[in-house]
Amino acid sequence: MTGRPIGESAVTAGGTPQALVTRTLPAVTATTFERAALVVNTGSRAGGRAFERARERLTALGVPLVDSFPLRDAARLPETVTEVLGNGCDLMVLGGGDGTMSAVVDQLVASPAVLGVLPLGTANDFARTLGIPSDVDAACATIAAGRVVDVDVGRADDNYFVNVASLGLSVAVTRALSAGLKRRLGSLAYPVATLRAYRGFEPFAARLEFPDGDHPPIDVGEAMQVAVGNGRYYGGGNVVSPEAGIDDQRLDVYVIARGQARDHVAIVSAFRSGSFVDHPLVTHVATSEVVVRTDPRRDINIDGEVVSATPEVFRVVRNALHVVVPLDSTAATLDSPAA
Image (tube, rainbow, N blue to C red; front, side):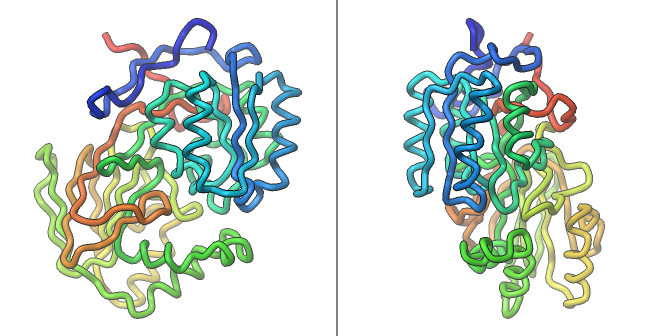
């Protein structure tokens, strides 16, 4: 940015998450940023063919690209983004899906750089939440002439997430959701993987505790799934709850209990609207912090990657990530400086 940082790091030297100190910015123009980098996961569903087009369009639109990285190996994403941010880039254009975002969100949260998103994956739930178009040309136009907002992220120990963390059936679905299945079926891979995972799934005991005292403890003796949502969408367009947002300083938490197959069919059929939270087998609360305990111990899926296990503490980190969104997006705002 020209002489005015977007904000301070969301993590202090001691590792404690802090709300970013931000200031209102005008709409993005070609001169807003000084150094931009393009990093594309070319192993994502549309990444290979989108890289050259994105580089061409961003350059034509005046975005000052100083580095471009087409990465076929997704394992190189964190180190590449760390290198880019260390080189002083104030705009990080990231191309890929939600898995790509998940791989580098820890690095982005710790940086004052602004994120530009090219949605090139199967689900693209983070982009969907923010109203970022999936068309490459339109997404590039947003990066060149959108506006900057700050959004919340969730945190589970040292793992940050933008969409949802979950355990139970969702972990079984993740394990059934192979790369080959996603390539063959696209967004239809999610319901297919869900049906595969549901067969023979064993419920578990779950307990939710709320350190802030905003809710009494919740015990579910036979749970099928627990989810902690930061954004609005997950799983290829499912809605966490009708009121869920990515800029509301809260996490939406739900537990689905064991029931008859017809009950679960009714719940799943309401995933797209988020109205499933009103079903008698679903417990739903909104909070800034929740502790999840289970018996037996359960692995936790964080934005599509199984990286943790219960017991776990989930917290919201306010305004932790700056993103360029379309001018007409209503998903988030840029907060004023603290008084």
